[in-house]
Length: 174
Ligand SMILES: Cc1cc2nc3c(=O)[nH]c(=O)nc-3n(C[C@H](O)[C@H](O)[C@H](O)COP(=O)(O)O)c2cc1C
Image (cartoon, rainbow, N blue to C red; front, side):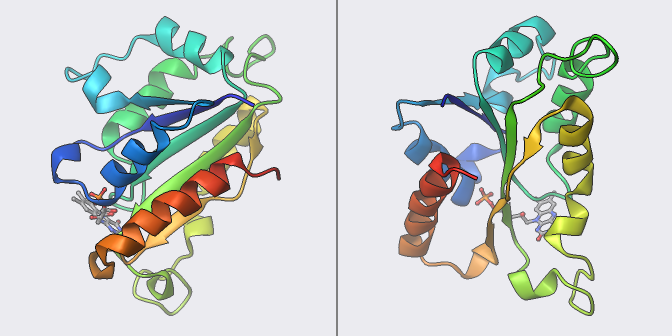
């Protein structure tokens, strides 16, 4: 099982959680960690290069901090460019079929905020539906999302622990 982790954080030098996760995942042999903002500082995504990377892996992971109830913008640009008609979807767009797809998300808000009646009203499962629909359209199996929430209140050890939990989550069979 080869796993591709697309990391999308616009300011990793100020990151606590995503940076810790990324550095931990870089130690795993079966994982390719692909830091999108570092690869594309000008924001011009290389469609063919990204499609080739996808072909070489079985499990695709989007790792990002939750920004405005979604991903940072470069990951959206990546989707717009890379998941093209005739490649990722459409009658002949079958290249992602049968792959697995997963999200790894950190949120500022705590878990309790993400429910009906909570501060943000909607669950993470509801808010990540566009990703699930994308997996569905491209024929990828959407696996359970890895989440670390309320990150401002976490101690350093808890963040390290979340990185270990992420490794287990990414390696698990579903
Ligand atoms: C532009 C921006 C938008 C954000 N939007 C949300 C949000 O919608 N929901 C939320 O829970 N946290 C939000 N946050 C907080 C981030 O999710 C949080 O700081 C991040 O997950 C921490 O990860 P890091 O240490 O890797 O930066 C936002 C932060 C920024 C800078």
